[in-house]
Length: 112
Image 1 (cartoon, rainbow, N blue to C red):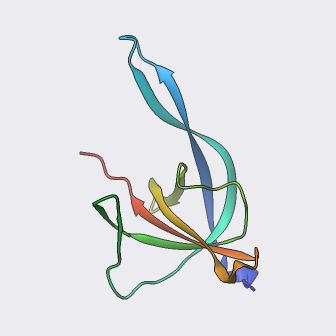
Image 2 (image 1 turned 90 degrees about the horizontal axis):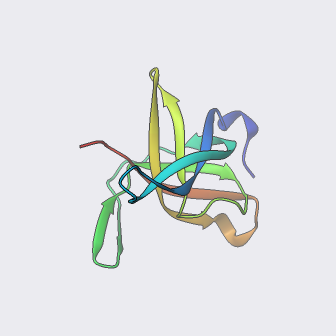
């Protein structure tokens, strides 16, 4: 069971939308479709997820109350130090398969 006081960070859920730019190319943008409170879980070591021959470094581990709306297709966004930070979801774990809490492995989106 998650203690409510540990869920201190408001996180916005973003879903992909496909639009067409002025050149007629398909462009993926993200729009908000929900929000929730999360706890950022400390990690003492670097963790890696291997899937389809690609390695992404997990930069964040978040704990949420269980919900069925988040998938690896979505992104998360939160404010830190006056700036918005965006995370790609790499994996979601339903802790104990009890539908009470979930852990989300994510990597920060960086520009450049």
